[in-house]
Image (cartoon, rainbow, N blue to C red; front, side, top):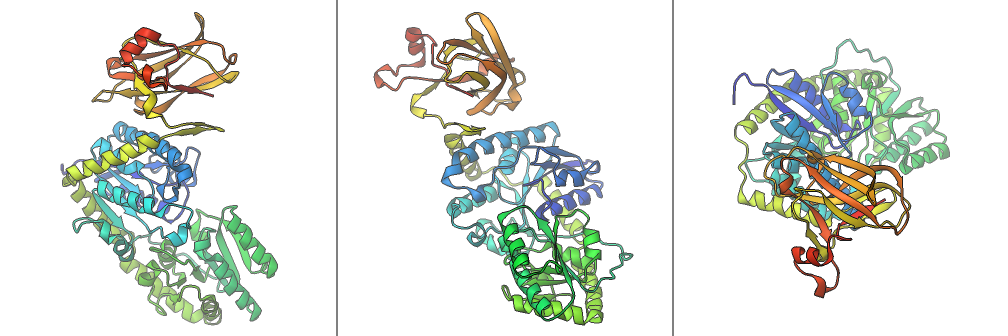
Amino acid sequence: MSGNRIYKIGLLSHTGSLGGAERMLYNMAQLLRKTDKFEPIMIIPALDESPLAQLCGETIEYKKIEALPVYICLNEDEESLFSSLTLRIKQDIYQIIEDYDIDLLISNTQVSLCGVMAAYEAGIPVIVWTHGIFDPFLLGNKYDSKMRLLFDRIVYELCDNVIFCSSWTKDYYANFLDDNRGVVINNWSQKMSNELVRNNTTTFICLNSFEKNKGIIDLLHAAKIVKEKGYKFEVHLYGKNESDYEKEIEHYIDKNDLHENIVLNKKTKNIQKAYASACCLIQPSFLESFGLTIIEAMSYGVVPISYRSGGPDSIIDDGFDGFLIDRGDYSGLADKMIFALENPSKIEEMSSNAKSSFELKYSEDTAKEQIVSLLHKTLKTPSKDTYQKEFVYDLIKLYLLKGHVKTVGGSSLQAIDTHRIGVSERLTKPLMYDVRFSIDKISRIYIILTSYATSNAKGSVTVSLFDGKRKLAESKVEIKKIVNNLWTEFDFDSIAVKKGKKYRLSVMCESDYASDYVVYEKYPKNNMLKMTASAWRKIWGRKYSLLYQAE
């Protein structure tokens, strides 16, 4: 490693929202910017102007991609679509790595295969940042937990190292990793100004999203108890998301007349204002691998009250800088809320303790040394590409190629019947095919291309549609956007056609690498007619042998 070189670090988020893991990735980008060794480039899976992209603004460079297909919610009905999207978006990430000369990729959370696969293909090291676990308790039984665990193992096999947010989380995945990989780096937060004035001793806040495992209903049970005992207080919830669970929350508030006590808010980027309004943070989650809001609260001197749910157990010193309550004990939660309302001087003392605990264990300076050391180590001595790693990669690639399908609008492009396909001759010249359509307007045509090329080819592929000799339209796609063995979409401007009429379609490759490219063709079901590709063409011509779909 060169002592003066600045290394480019790709930071792949799993969503464009502002959950705890996304905020930590942003914190990582900010931390890297403050070094003179690393340049962060965020990769955000949201094509619109997402909250995470807005947070990056002009201070952190970022690129936007499509939403990542996540394997944690995989079931049989979605398996084909998952395969297709994984291959396509993996290619988009690979292209960003190439275009920006990224030296190392950090893939945030182990929920998608795209990041580790793209880094493996690009030949750069990849670190997976594991923020938690996905227990069947959280996901329910409609998802395939066996496949999820298998994909977890594949992600860990392909990566060079893993950052765990807590020892509790690392212990959960201990059997997936050898002794040389896996480092615990506690989540951290920015050190807050001592000038922040908190002057409200009757307001509690909770920044959990409105999801069942986040325990919001338990918090409402506690609030109901506190109200019935005659106390004046407010609880500000920051997690509105228009979900069914939000309706359940609103129903509970209506039923128990808690409108004067419970304030519902959307997630906020202005967390300083939220913490400045509070005497305590309430964290009623049933399972928290770390507890980012807890250390954020402590950095502001806001005392956390939390269920014992994993990560918080090792952060909070019960009775010194916060309170811990057994999971599900909302009566105990109500007791601590009442204690805070009755003992403002004690809460002020615990507030000072919380700040001290944060600065000692969870500040940016504490994390910075560990992260810089890990990045230098991984860049200097990345894990070797073993036969086992290559075998694992080939297996997962085969699985994805076999099951791929692309769904667009209301139609579905089905997976390929491998018993009826072959490939064309090399695309050194335009290939012409007869086609017929079952619809009267064409907006998109899909074909499948593949390549024997061993390097990144430049150029394009053009699909043209003819009525006799008259060209109706054409559509061009750059080769760098084409994924081998996957449906490639060629867009047309709603061309009017006649159902069942014969049209001609040409496929032309304009590239110095045209001889490396072929297009998929289909052959008859009748085994007697399954001849070699060359013999088939001599007898029947191309006619209707192109493998295509249209909509």
